[in-house]
Every structure is written in C-alpha cells, then in structure tokens.
Length: 165
Image (cartoon, rainbow, N blue to C red; front, side, top):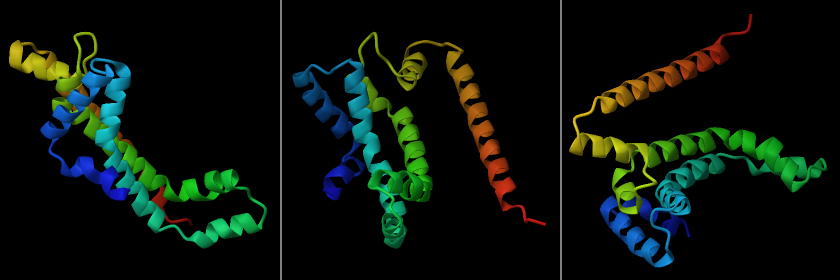
C-alpha cells in the first residue's frame, strides 16, 4: 500500500496531469472544485505520508500502552499522547503539501476551467499572455509573507531554547 501512495512522487508531473485529465473527463470532474481538491490531494499525499510515517516510527508504543493501562480510551490516547508527539511530522507534511500544491501549475492547467483557476495558473497566464505588473506585486507579497513566517518561526524557537535561570 505504501508504494501506491508514494507513486505520485515517481511519476512525472506531465504524465500524472494527462492521466488525471483523462480520468476526470470520464468522471465529469474537470473544472470543478472537488476535482481540484482531489488532484492536489493526490499530488501532495506522498509528502504527508512520508513525514507522518517518519514521526510514527520514532513514537514509543509503550506510551500508548501506558495511557491504555491508566484508563485512557483510544480517542483520548490519540489526542493527548500520539498527536502531540507526531505533530512536527504532521506540520511538516502539511507545509510540504501546501507548497507542492501551490507550485503545481501543470496539473492545474489541465484541470482548470475559465471560472476556476489557481493563483499560479493566473500568474503563468499573465506572464505568457500579457505584460502586467500584477506578477511583480504577487511576487513581492509572497516574498514578504515568506520572510514574516520565517521570522515568526525563528522567534518561536528562540524563546523555547532560552535557559531557565
């Protein structure tokens, strides 16, 4: 099963886009929001699975057994023990999935409709068809957003690493 979920990492993007186009054409999902969500989920799933599996391999199963022996149910054990321990892997997987989905222009070009386009597709169309300063404005906003996110992450980790006096 792991191999099937990791397959979109191996298959070239254009082959995946053509295959999904053919499948979505038969299922009437071209140009629909569920089609976009499904296609981008298929592309991003291997990155999430890889990160979460790495976090789960480092998880000590005795912690879950200890929670169960103290009367914790499966749901409570998951939310109070397992999820906090694998949260870095889940967060990293979510960030990788977002970045990959945001960067996926080829797949979006195949699945788009005139009414439903992603921002990267609009940028691509603007660069190839018009001479518009919108692309430069979006690039500046994206750069500033990235810098702010990195600074917030830096300050958050700096506060945690300070020695206790």
